[in-house]
Length: 461
Ligand code: AMP
Image: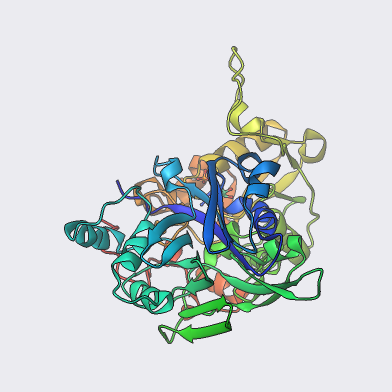
């Protein structure tokens, strides 16, 4: 089974007496990037200590686990996978004992030629333990003739095609690597220790630095390998491209709004999407209402551009877990109501513009529009703060197959009719790029325009 739909976060820290506790907090701040497993590997006197588990960061680690994760360096990971392979063996960081000693790899992104590489490696005798594409990196390292981890890593990642932001730790080094397109974010920072010295940190998002009191310094550049060891810090380019392909969906939905991703505030981008959406698709109405939390920043932008008042017409219950006991008698729309409850007091008799960040299958929007009508809205105008999602992501965002993407199968009018809105409009591709002050040379927007920056090795079959 392929395992290419993964959303994840990575973290790494070097030279801090509380390395594993800070890794824990960093992962905690990035929990939105993956909720199915969490893991930390620490480095203590050349040896690795591991703790991984299925579930949320707060549930996987107890105080005693963090006590056991001694040492002044650590790498960590949170993971979410939708391929049914929610197994502990797939939880990261993935670890192995190589000739030189232990290695731990935390990976965000998806490698699109992983099936090809996996087949080649198996044919050469490699034994795989899990379905994660990250394991390929361990095998490539173990086969490499050089003792030098950096040389082995550079050669290994050159054979990978697709998205990889990596935090790697050996017996004596912390390494950060980012693919030449820079699909997924990866940032470098530093944190002052109590004794005045400095620790190095890498993370998927800057919100992790905010929580641990680290300073953001710069992004790990696309095609860069950065490492730190007892000889100091080093950086090299293993590949150069004349374009990048930063995932625009990080700005639309995936990243936390308080992060700075690809050098831009995510919150700022989302407000801009809302402003552009209002310019492109105005409609007469009384209220602008976000779908919380994903549509809030775009709705603020739409409201400020249109002058139509912003109201929290839908309230979100923040304590909804994965499962709940269903009532014995059927309650209409129970599933969505437990999470989102429209307020009649705000909505009744009003012409409402509902803003969400994206529309994928259309099932959520349909339920929300229906609830807003039940709450007494006079009109419901749905505005989506990104273009129609017409293609799956092969680089690490969980979008369903093309056959399940409503905009790949139906016209805008058919979608409007399906969701039951009085009108429906999306942000244009041009509006999206205008709002992010970027273009095709900076961003990957393949889920909207089908322009995949790499070959897909049959994944689109
Ligand atoms: P639907 O159209 O029913 O598939 O759901 C769209 C909703 O899912 C939007 O409100 C988004 O905020 C949210 N969403 C979009 N992409 C993702 C994703 N990759 N993972 C989880 N939720 C998502």
